[in-house]
Image 1 (tube, rainbow, N blue to C red):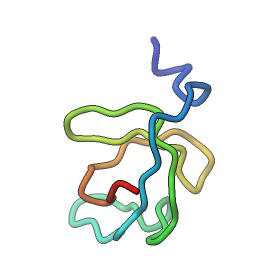
Image 2: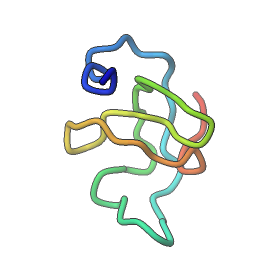
Image 3: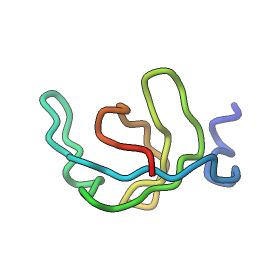
Image 4: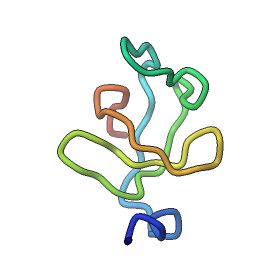
Amino acid sequence: MIHKNWENNPTIKQIECVHNDAAKFVVENVLTPGKRYDVKNESEEFYFVIDNSGRMGGFYKDYFKEV
């Protein structure tokens, strides 16, 4: 249940959204291209960030570039 505390974790690094054009999922409502996000956790495929809705979300790494 560690995922319940991820919002309070220290920031690992910052990333910048490069696009929100998703073929399968709707992410244009929660990601803004050009905006920087704080990474709270990371896996091989996903970054876990606090998105525009103010909640934790997991997104594919191809939406971002490291700053």
